[in-house]
Length: 290
DNA sequence: TGCCAGGGGTTCA
DNA sequence: TGAACCCCTGGC
Image 1 (cartoon, rainbow, N blue to C red):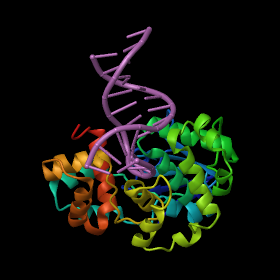
Image 2: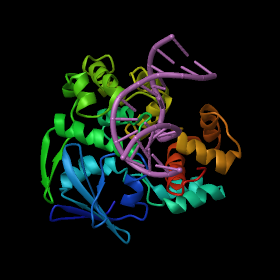
Image 3: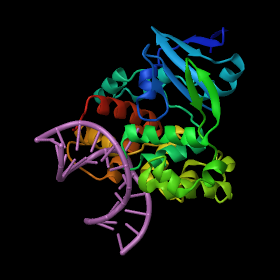
């Protein structure tokens, strides 16, 4: 991939990269939009700002070493999304969805942060999910530094959260009944009951079986973790939104979440994760089925 | 103003 | 299978 590195910026051209699509398609909770339409976040202990003008993408506050070691993988830049769209373009509905969210990419996010974030997401609303993750980072994370006048904090590691008080989770971080689930999950990783490092080499089936052992992780949350942190791109998480979209655009009547999963596997095969993101973004932004 | 439903699901009976 | 679950916001 060709890019220019200068002034602590990385600049490259990519037609399948749109910050709004990437950060608002439901996979990440910490990217915040600035007045200039750029997005800022802290991930892997670094503050980064992303902006787009025409097909030119600028990553600010990034040196070349971090770009190659961290952000290439994080933004899935080695993958050809135009080729994926080609594979998925055999039906009109999907073509429309891909047209709408043409710049979506599936991020490869930090494993632990993703596990906790999606435990928080259960039966919750996005503004509140974001707020809780933000408070957890301020309370338990490390101060990373200032960027454009704001202070940024990293997401805490599992050791720190394993020692957090359950009541603080609830009363300070406002996570509600998910309080115990967060602390207990962190403890299971800390104790080695779940091997975080090894889990990166599990196949999808083994990974799923291990993930649902965490309290607060069921089928949907496990799928999201697999897709958004472990790169299991065939995974098709079924939530209420994707259920509505599939029912109204593909099926024509109501059915179970399980059936939708089976059907999606049939239609999209190994590209399920990409299909899910295009449909989710398209469906939610246009309130399809609601 | 005040009440009430419902939310990117999971758990427990 | 179905109710309950924290908390917060939007709709009436």
